[in-house]
Structures are given as C-alpha cells and as structure tokens.
Amino acid sequence: MRAETQNIVAEIEKSLELLAQRMDYETAPHRLEEFNARVEDPNLWDNPENAQKLMRERQMLVDAIETYETIKTDLSDNIELIELGEMEEDDEVVADAEGAIKALGEKAAKKELEALLDGEADSNDTFLEINSGAGGTESCDWASMLARMYVRWAEKKGYTVELQSETAGEEAGIKSAAYKISGHNAYGWLKSESGVHRLVRISPYDSAAKRHTSFSSVWVYPVVDDNIEIEVNPADIRIDTYRSSGAGGQHVNTTDSAVRITHIPTGIVVTSSEKSQHQNRDIAMKALKSRLYQQELDRRNADINAAHEAKGDAGWGNQIRSYVLQPYQMVKDLRTNHETSDTKGVLDGDLDGFMAATLALDVAGKSRSEAQGD
Image (cartoon, helix red, strand yellow):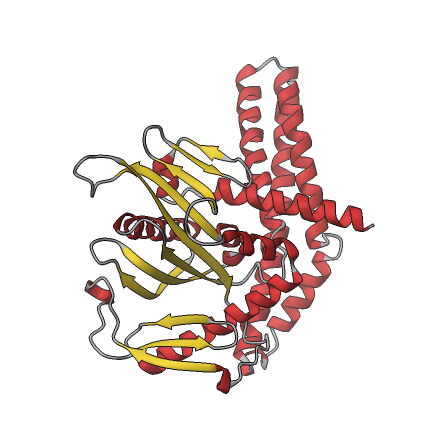
C-alpha cells in the first residue's frame, strides 16, 4: 500500500474512533433497543411533542450507527482489495480501491465534523438575519446576494427555508431579511456565519465602472425548543403593527398585519410579515425568545460571546470574511484563513469548507481551554 493511502487510512481510523466515542458505540445497540421498545408503545402519540422528539433522537442514533459501520466496513473491504490486487499484481484493482479509500476519507472527515456539532443548541433549527450596512444601494444588493447564497446552501443541505420578513432596498436589493431554516444541525452549521461580510467588485450601478466595497451583517441564533423555558415579562415588550414593505410578488403584503416586537430591556427587535397578524405575533414571539436564549448561550460560552462582540458595525475593520470579485477572484475567511478562488461556487451556496474550518478552529480552541483547565 502506498504511503499516501496509508496516511488516509490512518486518518479514517481516527475519524472512526471519534465517531464511536461521540455516540458511545459500546452502549448504542442497547439504547437503540430501548428506543424501539418505546416507539412501539401505543400511548406514545398521546403527547405528540415528546413523540416527535423521541423519533428524532432514535433516528439520530440509527444514522450514527449506520454511518460508523458503513465507513468501517468500506474501509476494511477496500484494504482487502488492495492487498489482493497487490498479490495478483492487478494495478487496476489497486487503483480503484485506492480511489475508493480517498473518497471514503473525505466522507469520514465530513462525518467527524458533524459529530463535533454537540453544543447545547447545535442540533436546533435556526433563525438567520441579514442587514445591509455601509454602502447604500451597493450594500442592499450585496445583502440580497447573501440571502440567495444562504438559501442555496440550505436547499443543498435539504433544509426547509421560510422567509419571516423582508424590507426592500430603495433602488435595489434588500435592506434586511429574516429566515427560519429548519433541519438537523442547522444552527450548528450556520452559527459560524454571524458577522460582517465584505464585498469588493466593480459596481453594476456605477456608470464609471469603478470598484466598490460593500458590507452586510449576518446574525444567526437558534430556534428554542418548546421545552426550553424562556420567560418574557409582558411589561418588557412593545408590540407594533405595520404595513409590510416587501419586494413584491408572493411576499407583498397590503394589510397592516406585520408585527414588530421590541424587547425594551435589551433593545432586541424582531419582526414577522406573514398574512395573518395572529401568526406574526406567534412567529415574532418565538424569534424574541430565541434571541434571548442566544444571549444566555453567549453568557455561558465566552468564545461565541467574543465573536458576537467582535462583529461590530457592518463596516470597515469588522468583517469576518471578504468576497473579492475584482480585480481578482477570491473568498477568504479572516478567522481561519480558509480561502478559495471559486467565488461563483461560494455565492451559489458552497459554504461547507468555510463552516468546517471555523468549526474545527472552535473545537481546537475548546480543547486547548479544557487542557489548560486540567
């Protein structure tokens, strides 16, 4: 076996060790039996919320076991094929097996990162807010490009995307937009995107074809589960209704049904502009509770808190990532130095590399902190 393939095999084995550790593989079959027994309880769906939670937890364990065992089996099978091919001097068999191991290494690395999404709210659905910053029309257009980028990313993940509210720009793009993105680990993946995003390009709105720099901010926070108690004092909130000013089409709203809730002690403002005012109150209140829950997570997690404090205003000096379209093409994350020249791919939603790099950096930082604490 070539040295390069041996290194990949070693990395896959490390990933398997972590995957086994994360799900406690030794007890996993017993826990799955317990889940299966509870699923067969005829009274399970008397409480739909608990039943759905149980089914999600069971499926997560089933997926974890299947992932681990599939990678382990595929690795063993391809190692045997390489050994057999080398014995029979069949270079084609060896090459095919080495290619399969290389692909398996990429899959194992991805699953290892997913297994590290074990924060308190990482598995939750998420709210994502985008606001244009310094740059006027350019920034409004940039905000709409970011919105498209994240919607594309979410769709590729198989997540459900719901537009909660949107305010159109005066000439182009959007001033702001808020989405709810639903799917397993939606918050865990997207939380690293909170911050200021900087765009450099030749402006399509400048007749002199000069280069412009624009900024927009992204804020991500988890959708709180119904079983998480977040108390909101009615005296601490102000509820306003207004007419939505969406971009038109399916999002146009001609009644004063949109709702804005202001949490006076913190200054947090959340909005929703669906068709029903009652529905909007419910959506906005859930969003407010999620924001308050995020604040509590921030207080308990110094790393996340520092990241939000460092986000600052959507302008010079505060960006976490730069997207340069002219004079050259590059997207670079300033926290991890991860970069790519495939700007089109990134703007079409290919963000996993950036998210994985930030996640790995966070995990490394936590590991160092734990080691120093020990």
